[in-house]
Image (cartoon, rainbow, N blue to C red; front, side, top):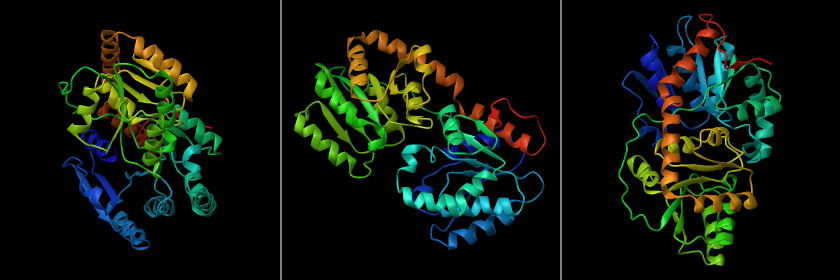
Length: 360
């Protein structure tokens, strides 16, 4: 996401764009455009702290510098924002849902200590916080932050290919593609499937397992005797990931909470109708007639899936087409880039406050 945003900004900005990232294998797989300078720093504390400061001293020259920090908690985030604060540089923090209740419940003691020691201080002094949705905006206010907050959604890859279906049309496929984590509500999908036992459909769950949750869910699937109807797959990437969308008939994300939910946008871009929950900011699925937006839990999911399974395949395809048109118009990276640049210009007193920036 950071690489895609930076690459789009490099097209629109008449200046240089730099990414500073901790050195690890996944960084080497990132591919920002040639117009973006990529810098790797150590992933080991305290070396990463000093390397970040040294790099920023070289990069942050002149009066037109804005530091945009993605994420919170880790040592690089601390080094980045503390440098900007000390040198009186305007800085923006995209929290990426890391202050939502589900995120705070993971390693809660460490996060409470971090908030007390440094994190809240650095966030309270940020020139602007960037939220991906109004849900995240509300969560930041509830957490006590009174900064200006810009609501800027996450974009989707403009190069998503349109692929032919590669598997037979029977059985029909419901796809869940996400991290396999308790937060994603996949237990509700399995319980609903067990209650409905839909004929002519199967459920594919794809993604990396966290907290050994895949193993726990596989045990439940075996207990229910659903091994022939629900299948787990390891994560896939690139064209192989998009092929999964095109091979499916419906996308399901029964999550407890997302600050945005990029995978929903990706599914819609691949012409899949979507069923997700009020834990996401995708309530417009209903108005756009491209999916279902339900309460969290097994009972609401059973009711919604009953409607899905009764919907004609041709209508599901029409829903997918409507969703595709929506995200192509609203969530392209170039549009997101211009919104973020408008925030930077405002902070540098080069432009007026954008109407998507909300003050306390």
